[in-house]
Length: 295
Image (cartoon, rainbow, N blue to C red; front, side, top):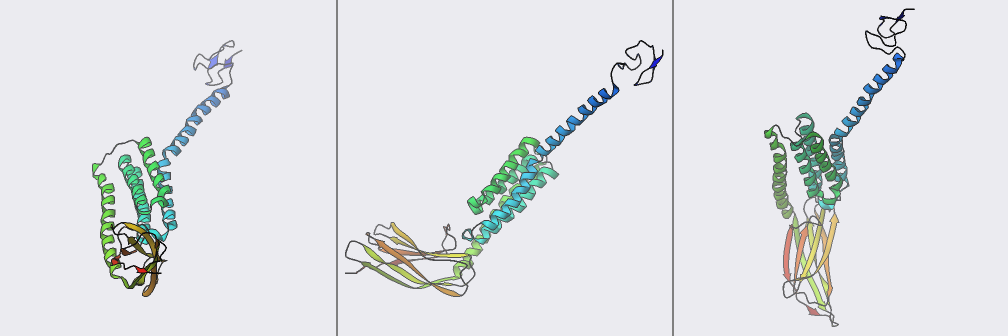
């Protein structure tokens, strides 16, 4: 009886076990080979999908970093200053987008990574621990970009982007800070300063330095501190005489810096700052103290 190959149709001897044309095993099922072929072709596709997802992590984390930087800025206390908060959010958005653009569109993983790291560092510089999460996200995104995409930089001219980002931000910070400092100093007036430090007769000095502060423009925060010095010009006490969130423009406030200690103060320094962490006062004045007897 004549038989035919189930795979290629070639005529075969009735006792043949293999096709002498295509080599097909006549004792096997053609569907078995199709199943094996389908398994071998589908497995790499699944692996490729997983690989593509992993290599997209730098992009995903950078996008999340941008979103988080905005949320962190909105959640930062006004004590840091509105300018610093706005600057941190702007850096997160612009720096994050530039880093993504360099990595994805220009295929410059090294330059893009530097841009993202600089972005995270600048955010932390402006709002400190309130920008920690976005800073970490940008840095991890940069490290993964270098790991998955490589450490090459094809277009050396694109190095200008991260360099200009840092230079421009510092230029704006210095220029804007100087202009703000000048305007803020001219908007503060301190007067009617009085002192009342007494020796209570029991080994303690007690009293206060007080006065008025006039606020001539809008501030997010203002604080008056009074530092007391001994005869060796060392600070022996520091007190907050007044502070206010969003003080009213055009209003005069009272401040009073209290003192109570065994050491006799000989000088007091009044300082007005616009941030709890500010190292550049808007106003300073030193007064010599006259101690009277309270007995």
